[in-house]
Length: 162
Image (cartoon, rainbow, N blue to C red; front, side):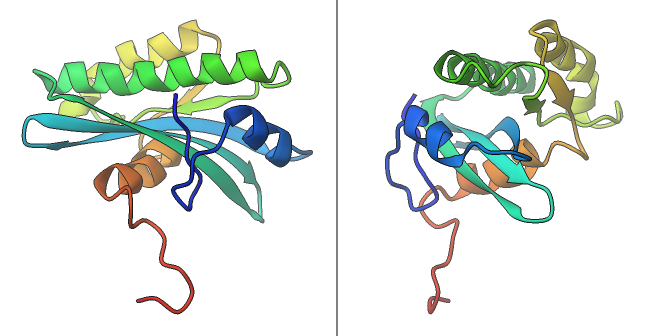
């Protein structure tokens, strides 16, 4: 995977983990996507969050052909998060399924289209031993990955810009 920092500069995951791990930092991962025409952009984020202090993240975005259904799209999003989590655990054995939380972009209410897939998708994550959150608590996927997938080059405004 090709990870980038908040300045859109490539960064090795090994270096990111070494430079940002620390006491009290909680790891989260999530994926969201944006379909434009015949292509879908999938963005996975890995976040170290320090409660009360904020967080630092890296993201990986890939483009693929548009999925044939919402189910396929959600399945891919979930699998990209699991796959990245497994890759990260290989790089840093201190990150384990017990501490890494995977956020998935599905609603917990079955009246919403994504809600009917919640059980299966959470089951995929839980079967790997990870903790799992869905909406409204899956902020890594539904907020951060969502914003980057919609506009990967203009997420942050630098000081002095409007």
